[in-house]
Amino acid sequence: MSGHNKWSTIKQKKGKNDAARAKVFTKIGRELAVAIKEGGSADPTVNSKLKDCIAKAKAANVPNDNIERIIKKAANDSDSTNYESVTYEGYGPSGVAVIVEALTDNRNRTAGEVRHYFDKFGGNMGTQGCVSFMFSQKGVLVVEREELEKDEDAVMEDALECGASDFEADEDVFTIYTEPSDFSGVREDLEKLGYSFVSAELEMVPDTYTKLEDEAVAEKMQKMLDMFDDNDDIQNVWHNWEMD
Image (cartoon, rainbow, N blue to C red; front, top):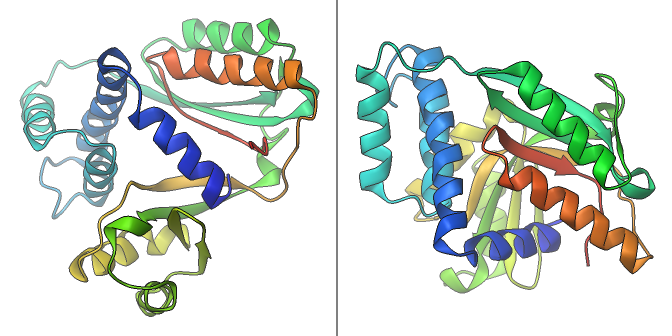
């Protein structure tokens, strides 16, 4: 998604009701627990994946108390559910490329649900690799303009000096891109300069976009994305729909 579309999506998510926000907290909680298990430590200073997850949680407005409680529970719960990372690929209405990332304790259930969502709204689930070649993984940091006292040139200079690979200015936000391996370092260096983020995570960024001219088709696409969003197993959905 471009900076503008990304910001529209963030605003939409932040404006959701308490039940929807609780679902976001649940998903991020699952990511934190997996990061602790995979990284072998509940200490973010030695577990970089956990550190990145905490940054993502804070950007999503998850309260610090919630983050600390989830980390403590995951660290002390040796019998916690084993979640497996699975990625699905497919096409939405009119051939929109879609990547779905899930953390699940039941692959068959999740695969069946993902396939159903694709089919229900005129898309279809494809094979591994059918659309991922149209995306590049990048670190993406989104900064709200009104939160800053600096102008565009100063922010771009800070971002590039901290090791960012690209910078995009939009009406409401600045979007800072990094190579995946540089993401944590760039984020931390910008935090030291006083920056805070409304979104901070590794994303699959499309190389090209598909515009849906037909309103009915766009509505189907949005409903499909909402179904993915409502599923607790699904962590992220990346697509190349050029949203207005």
